[in-house]
Length: 450
Image (tube, rainbow, N blue to C red; front, side):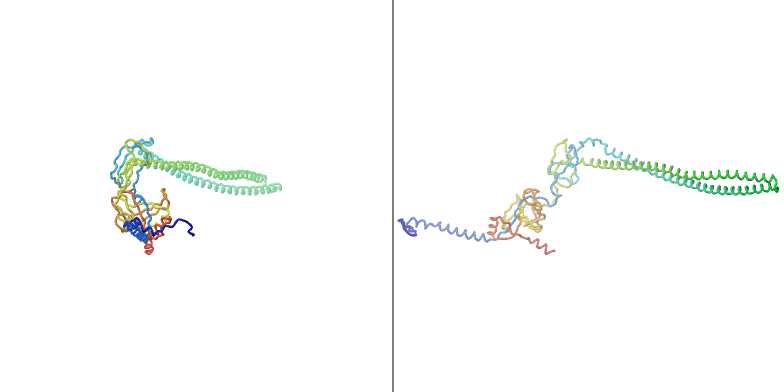
């Protein structure tokens, strides 16, 4: 550029000639500040190059490993009125100990002899059932007797038919014999008449032959009547078979009808017996439900109902119990972005609220007051808080967890991942990238064992 301005440039080096500038330049704290800046810069660069252990942090609470070891609420199975308490909050109860007694409030169960009366009804119906069974057996015997009598009657009628056939055959033969006699008598009469006309036979012989002919003619009429009578008897015997069959079929049908009626009553009574037995069992069980008992050993945490004479419905919570024996565990919640990095069996660090702790998340070896844990379950469905639940149990290879822990105590957790430089972790956090995908050594060891 052309120096066309009338203003002259200030010579910086010329400022050194002034005493004030010399005094400011010679002050010692500027040198110290420069050294501090250089030292801080060097330390910052060194820190950025230091190793940093990536981790997944979570927060949760102390719980139990098994579902049956967690605090539970005891409910009433039936509705009733509170009559007497047998425990108070903080008491230790054993399995089967009585906690509360309630009385009946439904009018269907007010009868003090309800169970005994129901039992008597069951016994009466059972006796009725046995009676119907005996009646069915008697009707079966009656049907057998009718069948046997029917067979005898049919045999008798069959014999009569055979007798009728033989009689018809005999009468037919006799009729043929009479017809032969008529022919012979007619021939003799004609011969005697011819001889009488020729004068060779007397009139007495002719009259004798005429009498014999008339006698034979009379016999054939009688024999024909016998034959017709025998045939009618044969027809009557056959009709008798049909009558016997119809008569005993009617008797058998009536007896079978009575039998089926008895069977129907028997089955109906059996259904009533089963129903009454069911009621009897239900009443017996209901009598045992008036005493609410402890399902397992534990401590009474809190009475959810109070007072005497208060009415409760079915399923109403009465008290909460904490089991006396349990395996402690930790449930923690992690963000969805961190879920793929967690594996079952992975080691984690946990520390508890109220327990002295110094934690450096990136340098776990420098932390104090943390305890080892192992992941045993990872929930596959997101929780109401928008995170995934992870269940952790104590690591058996490390120091045991404090015995003073109570269920519900707050917990912080860290799952250790890959080791990277500090500058990389800062860069990852600023960009919102997930931690490096990491496979724990426990998974590799399990594969090697397999």
